[in-house]
Every structure is written in structure tokens, then in C-alpha cells.
Image 1 (cartoon, one colour):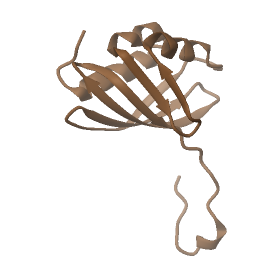
Image 2 (cartoon, helix red, strand yellow):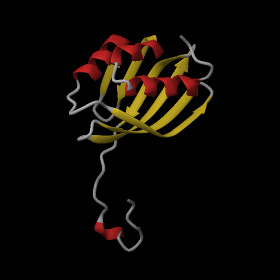
Image 3 (tube, one colour):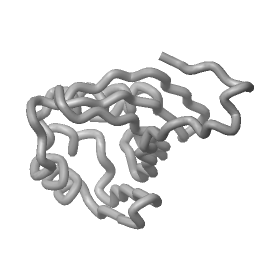
Image 4 (cartoon, one colour):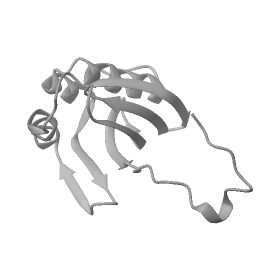
Length: 128
């Protein structure tokens, strides 16, 4: 199935991910789908490996996904998504390329939080 616009495709991707039925996510991935994680210098080719990666990832409970931001222009969509399994929590910044209603390329960053440096404490305020 294809979706009317790239943002709808990405919304469906996150909806399917939230179902925790990872094989269902393949429906929105192009046959030549590629996922890249620059921070760890890893690349995943194909829906089958993407599905297995998510099935085999250690989790404490069902994954939950909260879309915080979704922005699109042309064939490109960017999302900021909060992810948790009830114990582990992370944020994913994802850059999607959509071709013919399916995701052909996904570039993701998983930033780790870190303590604010003391040398700028006089210039900033803590965020909740």
C-alpha cells in the first residue's frame, strides 16, 4: 500500500512500529530500503534485516513511540520521536527519504543525554 504524501508514510511507519508487530513495518519500506546509523557506523539493507533487528533488540516490555515533531518537504521527512520500553528511554532523530510512497532511505541519530558543563551554568537554565 502507498500513502498520499511522504508525511503520511512516515506516520504509518511510526504507527506500525508502535504495534510492536515489526514484520508489518515492511509494508512501508521500499524493496531496496537502507537504514544508516552514522554514530555507530552501521548500515542495514532490506526490510528483512530491519525487521529482525527490531525483533531481536532486547526490550523490557512493548516499545512505545511518541512523535514529538514531524516535518516534511518534497520526498524528505524528519521526525523526532521519544521511544521507551518502560525501562529504557531514548530519542531518535530520523531523516526519511520517500520514493513511490515507501521509505527508501532512513538516516537515524540516537543522541545520548549528558550533564550540562559547569562553565556555562551562569548562562543557561535547566530544562525539565
